Each structure stands twice: as structure tokens, then as C-alpha cells.
Length: 177
Image 1 (spheres, rainbow, N blue to C red):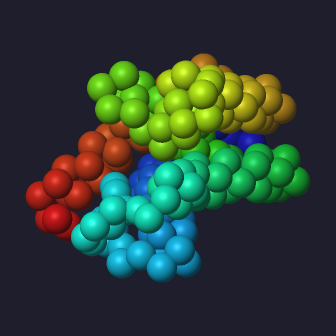
Image 2: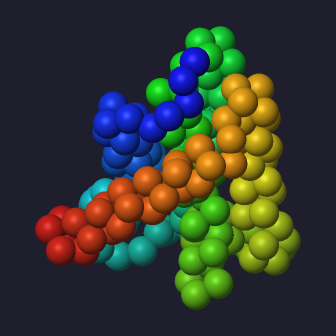
């Protein structure tokens, strides 16, 4: 199978980024709704419309919903790629790793989902984010080896993800709030 990047692959990567953001935030949103809260959502955030969570547990459950969804989806696409040998599914797996890695790095400034949960569990800010990132990195590396994806192919995926993330964050800040 050819490993080159074409317009279809680029468009699928864009779709993977947008859908990954949307469903990650939707998981937070539904967790809050299921717990009885009025929630709001954009492509890059889910939030309480007013007030605060009644318990710390509720806050942690809502925080956990997005990463749990992203991890599950990453494992699903890992197995889909293994079964189909279709590189067009790879952006969905790759972006799960990319998304959680960027969240971990942003946690240096403001603790993100896994960092907040990790601190709350008494593990410090880094144990849970590192565990999630290394787990997803393992899936990316294993898939890359099995499918013979090169470092160049992965770097291109990184660059494409970065461009599309910039678009999502920009649109979220200027059009959806």
C-alpha cells in the first residue's frame, strides 16, 4: 500500500481532528448532563453554564469522561487498523495521542483533565497524564511498526494535526464563544 499523503488523507485528518475534539467535549458535556448540570459546549471546551459542581466527585467524573472516551476510541481504531490495514483510519488513532500529549504539555500552565484527576488522587500532576500519553504512544508506535509507517509519515501527521488544531482553537475562540 502506498504511504504517501494525498488530498483525501489530508481531508480525513481534518475530519479526525474536528470529530475527536467534538466527541471528547461531548463526553464531558453528557457526563455533566447525566449528573444533572446545565452544561455548555464548544469544539474545545465543555463547561458548567452557571454555579459549580455539587461534589468533587462530580467534577472528577466530568473531567474523566473526555479522556476516557478518547482512550477507548484510540484502542478501537488501533484494532480497526490492524484488521483492515487501511492507513485512512490512522489519523483517528494518531490524533488521540496528539490530543492527550498537547493536553499534558498545557498542564504546565493550567492542569488539564488527567492532571487535575491525578492531583486529586494524590498522584501528583504528572502520573496519570504520562500514563495516558505513554499508553497511546505505544499504540501509535505498534501500529507504525506493523503498518510500516515511517517517521516521515508520522511527522507529516503531526504537522497536519497541528494545522487543524490551530484551526479548531482559532474557530473556538472567535466564532463559538
